[in-house]
Length: 111
Image (cartoon, rainbow, N blue to C red):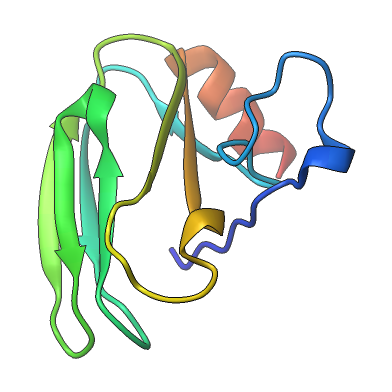
């Protein structure tokens, strides 16, 4: 699956949404499954980091890295690129929402 998600800027945030972490299209994943992430980059070094999952891996152009995680709890989790990769480095958030299996499959049915 190819997935693009962009930061929501301060003036467009709703009450309670964290600044520079909220995205226009969070990644939705099901609870209770082993998820494998394949990480790469098109341009420069980046670093995919989601601290609550214990994940941090470099995204290197021309290389494919993988890591896996077992999602045990539902909720919203945030991360960021943690590499000094360029001018818009601060605007590369990661927002992951872990849903119950029933919610996730209902979401898939609607998409």
